[in-house]
Figure 1 (cartoon, one colour):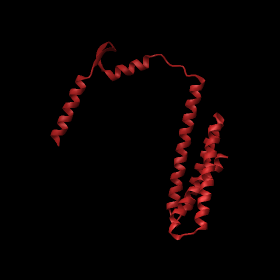
Figure 2 (cartoon, one colour):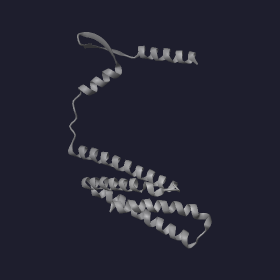
Figure 3 (cartoon, rainbow, N blue to C red):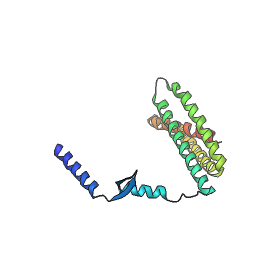
Figure 4 (tube, rainbow, N blue to C red):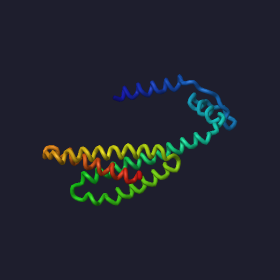
Length: 169
């Protein structure tokens, strides 16, 4: 084991010594810097790119989408915890509602930038909810106790997607 660690250390040392070195004058002393440090200097010393208004808008949109998706993941997590807790699922209700409020605010901020993608997303979710309603109705009409777990999963999906539709309105 220690022989392997010693070999790895020697190999890292050899690779580091083979790495190209550059000379720099720092504080009146000549020092060696690695190729990676030299490349970093080059990037930092390069001209700054001016972002167009469109670039700024895209960057802002992407940042807001990331926040919105994180909130949606948290909502899904709390929803699952709530479903899995047989004793007191209501204890998660305040957190669930707060997350939906934050998600609603995030959707509003996305609408401020561009409402068309938000509306398209809403339309897809509405279609998904209608599909789930039809599937649930079919399961209920031809009731089979063997499909109870499946029906329960469908209700959970319906609940979450219905809450999403309400938020997207």
